[in-house]
Length: 107
Image 1 (cartoon, rainbow, N blue to C red):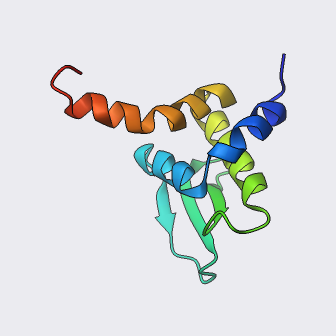
Image 2 (cartoon, rainbow, N blue to C red):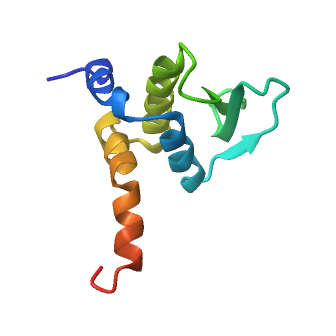
Image 3 (cartoon, one colour):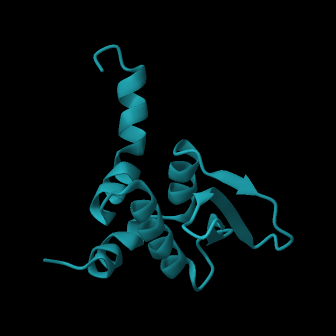
């Protein structure tokens, strides 16, 4: 059985920051203002200590740490939803398909 890191390493090359941000916005994460324009910061809920749960991504795929930040974000989203990494990756992959099904008269 593959670990979450192995699954993400395989899938990460096809997933960009814009894919993750589209998903988290659809899941109700709120974008926060941040003084560093190179960072995208989102918040959703609070942790067991009463602190806001924040997700931080680079503002683009060209940053060296983008693949690691995307992988960390996917793990956080999975944990927050009580889902597996595979389920989150499937949500990301199906995002466009679901929209097509909603507007298709046969969907």
